[in-house]
Image (cartoon, rainbow over all chains, first blue to last red; front, side):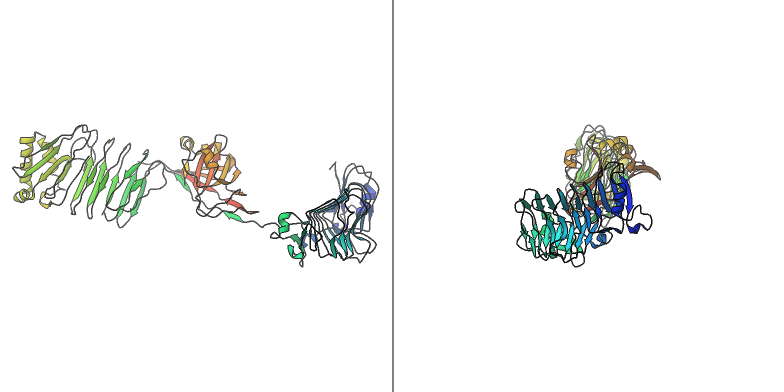
Length: 501
Length: 129
């Protein structure tokens, strides 16, 4: 638009209108307004008016604030003109109702150059046999696009011989005769994307450009389409149904739009952990797992025969996965920083495993206990061990003692003890804080021997053997064995520690 | 699937506010995906700015709140797909955050939209390891 000049027209402005009709507005402003004339219509904007003459700029006439979409709701709000004649050039009529009930008039009669109607509802309820709803009889470049056209007269369009007539995307129904008859093979006329139905004949003579037109009869490009392809023809909704093939073909004036579905996405709050996380899993028992930072992975597997692997991913994680601890009474795993490996152990029923790992371990420990029992076994792995020394006491005294030297070990000894032997594992030096951090002496005592002595006597014998035959630190060994947790009298020949790394 | 980029961990929550420019709904994104792979799994996306990101104290924690968006999807999702919301930095080709969403069917018929709710994540207080 060029510097548009807006004018209110029509009787429903209730006194606020600039002009009562479009013809009065045109008469006052044509050739005078310093730009496009824009008429904002409300209600009745003119009766059998003629817009004739010249204006330097374009002219627009439409309903103020209403977009016609083929439904009764918007149609009922359209401003309306009766038998509008336009002989001026460049007049564009949109979103209006163009009406006629006179047998000698058209609802819309444009004859100027470059004048068209679009998004309009055009209705001719006359009984004319020679006129119709729209005249493109003398228009040089007239056009009707995207209009619903309802007629009761003989024809919807009256087309002049070889005149330019562009009829595109209209829905037309009700003509008693031939709704549209072009000049045969005229190159100046275009008829495309129209939906004609319920007419005497939908299409008569066809121009050179005649394509993608639907009809109820056999005259269209797509045939057999009637009012059932409208959303609600009886209810005044003339839009093409979403489910109609015409919808996909783009045939018709207006189209039903999919309502669409709004799909709500649900999320849960997440968190970046900068603290350790305590996860309590109750699988007929309580298991506490404390996971620390900076771990790449902590792995505890084979906790119980037939149990599933337990994987704890620690770094910045939001969850811990613990499963199938089976019937272990309690399992407490405490891991500290910068541990690169973790223990694996197999336990049977009713046994207690406490695994405490200290800092900077480089080795892992695996313990397989194959027999049932009620005693607890504590396994503690020490740090910075570099040497392993395995010594044995001869069997003459009925006592076997296997001692693994404690300091600077790189690996833990492997000790085989048969089912008739007694096992204690005591962990030795360089552990600081944990009360179970003392391993590295393995003692085996035959039950026959054990039954003959009290605990203190057994300790004395062990110490004596160690001192006399193995040349190890007597004070240290005697101290650990005296730890009250392991009662020699209670020990029964039921355990086998098969492998310790 | 929940994860964050290294730069998020390195620079903290402000990294989201300073760099995130796209919020997206995607399917089956895993942490090992690179940016191209992850963004290839997007079914709906919309632009966002630092103004969509709010950082606020919440007790001893820091709470990150990211405005949701209603978006016209470009593809569909199945109930079996792992639905996630991505916060992206397209300038530096970085998946800043990947936040899990409840899996559901996502349709892409005419007029369909998806509404991503306001996202919430926390950076927790330090504590003993």
